[in-house]
Length: 114
Length: 115
Image (cartoon, rainbow over all chains, first blue to last red; front, side, top):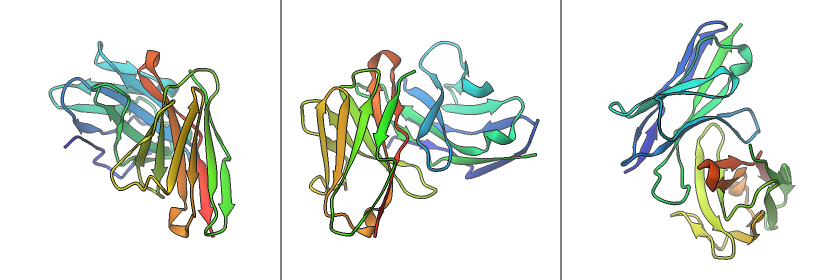
C-alpha cells in the first residue's frame, strides 16, 4: 500500500539552531513530493515541492528539502529556526499516475523555543 | 501562486440541519477539486474528488448521500453536509488542482461545529 511516514510526532529545537523534519514514503514510480505548513485553524500553506532535477529543493521562508531516491526520503530542513516557524508540518506525495490524488503524512509538530 | 477561498470560514449549526460549504478558485480554472476532512491533531483525510461537470468520486467509507458534492463550474465546488450530527463536526479543507503547477492549492478551511 502507498504510504507516507513522518516518524516524529513532535520536533523541538532552539531558535537559531538548524531543524530537520523527517519524511519517508512508499510509493512506486516517480512521485511528486511536497511539504506544507499549517497554522492553527488555517488551511495548508505550500512550502516546496520536488518534481524532478536537483535533489535539493529550496522553498518558502528559508526552508529546503533533500530528496533521496535510494532511501525514499524527503526531509525538510532549515539552517536557522525561528520561533515563528512553530507549526504543524505535513509531507505529501502524489503518485504521478494521472490526477492529483495526494497522500499525506500524519504531520509533525515543530516547536521552536526562544 | 493561486488563490483558493472557502466560505464560510466557520459555521455552527443544529443537529439535523444541512450546511453548505463553498470552495472557489479565484484566479484560475480548476477542473478537479478535492475535499478533505481533518480531525484535531490529525492529518488530512481525503473525502472525495470533485470533477467539473461530472459526479464526484468518493473515498471508501465516505457516505455520498451525507456529503453531497457539486462542481457546477470551473471555479466553484460545494460540499453540503446533510442532516448534520455532532460527529460531523470537523475542519473541512478543499483544494483545487492546477495542472501547469503539478500541484493542489488549498483553501483556508471551514470549521464546522454541530450542536
